[in-house]
Length: 224
Ligand SMILES: Cc1cc2nc3c(=O)[nH]c(=O)nc-3n(C[C@H](O)[C@H](O)[C@H](O)COP(=O)(O)O)c2cc1C
Image (tube, rainbow, N blue to C red; front, side, top):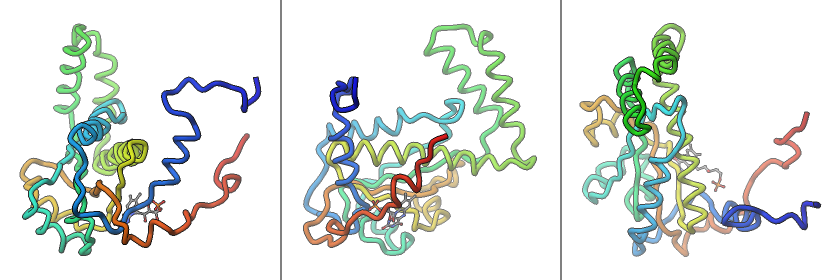
């Protein structure tokens, strides 16, 4: 079967997927009058919860900042980027600090419960994870590892949003320490790394018309 005649098995076609990925861009100016409908937002929250992570340990929390007053407070600690206050929704991506043996215990217990198996049957996996978190501080930065897991959830969120016709802007241009304080995360042992704004692009956003800047396919994809 040639590529052109091959039927795809997915729900959406490869063409639609690529069309949406070309359609999306990092929105600079959101339409303040438009809100994401509840069912779509619910699905986007689920893309966060369903994101894969190393060992499945899910070292994260996603804080949906709905309070307009809180978002106003976040604006000056986000390089005054207007998306923080203008977008329909704003999510802060935070990782748990200093993941340790307790987090492994919790995860093993939860897995045993969900899969209805004895926790003892997960002993091998548990020891593997304990060895992993036990390397923290010994040339291994576990907070950096946890932060990297957040980017997996971000990728999921951006792609899923595009597929559902929702505009986004990932925003690393923030003061994470100030975020921790304003959102009360420092007390909870979590640390914000970046945020994502979601909603609908403003007709006045000139960046929508900018051609996508990507290196040539053959420059970034190699075969061996
Ligand atoms: C992790 C990450 C952080 C980013 N931080 C910001 C930001 O603080 N402000 C902003 O306007 N765009 C930000 N961007 C958007 C990028 O500049 C944009 O994705 C990139 O230039 C590619 O363009 P496109 O997404 O419009 O295709 C960020 C993107 C990523 C992936």
